[in-house]
Image (cartoon, rainbow, N blue to C red; front, top):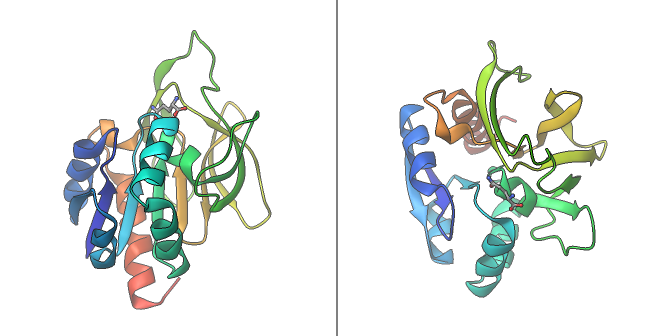
Length: 194
Ligand code: GLN
């Protein structure tokens, strides 16, 4: 199994480290041709406007939509979550528009620009360690989207079939269980068991 990390901007090497801690192979993805060899893709945190611009420039918008149409799992973290969303609060044009949800950027306010907490996530036994950095939150989800975790009543992790999104940075700690969860999604999609 091979999992790619979109390597246009943001926390790429950290995700590759977490993927290998969770027992799979992670590769940085810089060209659309690489998608063919992958079973799953992570879109990392960083700056969503920049990532979106670079994705358009290098042809990733269409290529990742096709990747998703094949049922291959995609995991967006922080800015990556914003890139996956169908709707961004405010007037900003959305990017991949794959997940049926509205997200708000930089939603935790100034005092809480950056913080860590333990989060209960549906499908993972014990709370996971989550680092939030100028994090977005999910304001509303469609009926086809399952909420996996909330923080102070705000949605911060969600899943829509083969798509997974988290507001925080699971790759900045040694806790790789959300990566393990994603790897299980990838395994299931490879064997056709959802
Ligand atoms: N605030 C960033 C954005 O809106 C996301 C921050 C992050 O990925 N840590 O794109």
